[in-house]
Length: 304
Image (cartoon, rainbow, N blue to C red; front, side, top):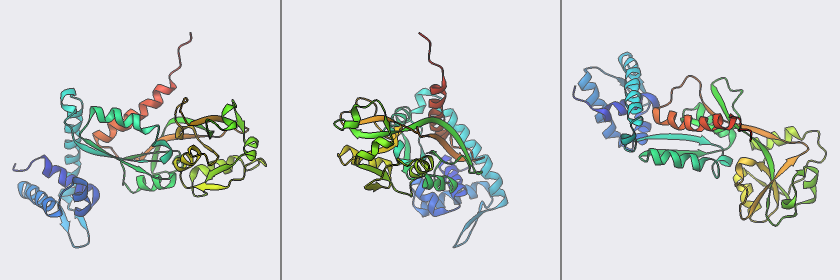
């Protein structure tokens, strides 16, 4: 038959997105070039795959049946190529992750670097958003999967926990709190305290846990994202309660994390994806690498 893999990928993209325009953007093609590929495939198969109007694109009955087989074929081929060490470096494709900003600075880079070294031609898109926006992005199929701390109650989503982290006090190395082994919420009332806004999921977790705590600190400055809050702390504007994931490892030249107690507040970060939706081999590989971190963390440490 007179068609090739690019034609098949063009068909799968249009079938998945329901739009020639969106598929052209995803494949980095012009719309006329994409249309030519679809027409070439339809001519080779001798059937119409899409009903096209000025407003929408619908698959024909044959098109819907063929889309499942085309997906399986492309996924099987890509999976085989990714498993061959000498070929993996030449595998191309795209993976889109929706991720809470607090995980971007110190947690995600190491994972993405390892993935990039093995698959240098795969484009990785990171959509850094607030927790609620990450949920919406996954529900709309605008990302392959997400990294979030909410989503367990969504019936359309699967939530796979990978780590549990406590909130800590973020301060500079010169700050008086940096010398303490632990800090209570009551201790924060004596210092310039900053917080995320009420729109933040982290703020909701903190307010919920501190409902009956009269020592809950007043704040003089708010930021929308935890990563911005950490930058303000580093600039010397004050202290803040942030998830441990948002802070650098111990030994950082400027920033210090101090355990925050009475009460200890924590959150569970996990991977979220649409329930029942299969991932592309490239996305599944990155998803599995992140999930492996959870399994590694759960292994008991040897007794010495």
